[in-house]
Length: 249
Image 1 (spheres, helix red, strand yellow):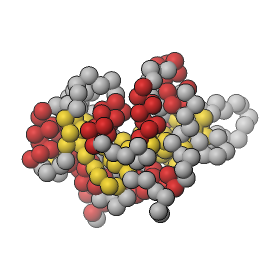
Image 2: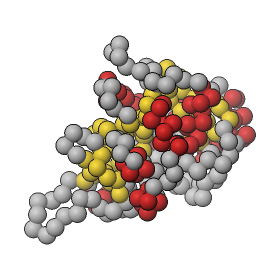
Image 3: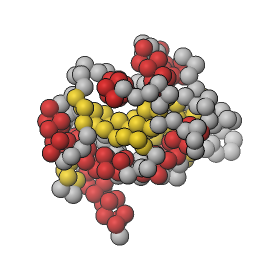
Image 4: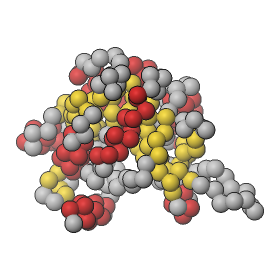
């Protein structure tokens, strides 16, 4: 549509990781993980540009060897979002453009999820978007699966590692939504977000997106049928490889 802004995807990756050091360079079907994330992201026709952003020379050099556009960023960022913002500044994108934060540990990313993430920006009032999917009750019990509850207009009311909404006894079974950590921000909103200090709720839950809600910045949540298949530990690689084989079957 003519009123759509330009979309820029940035994939933040770092070498240091408590659970999986060197994760972006881990091989999946012979290629480093970051290559798979880039390939899947860059296939999306809505994106004007897709780049990798890192603070590690090993990843930077490997990206160049695989012809993946890459930017070297500072090494003191507290989050991937801060790295994304620095990369967006390097790109000198227009103030009304949208910056898409693609997690660097999603090598099985479904390209259609990006379409869903960007769809809300047909509306000028949308500042930030993200995705969520329906959970089975056992999944909602896990604190590593972030839950989100929505207002009637589809905007986020709250994100939590706890099981929300709480279900009282003798009530109809609650429906739970799991957050998928892909984000799209209008550039000016991302700039403002990064100027703010961590919020009280953000620090309590260890969830950066709560900073937006604490400062009154609405987050539009799009429901997707697709699942996230992130790689957190070395043992997750085998599962991702199986998913890729099944996709080709």
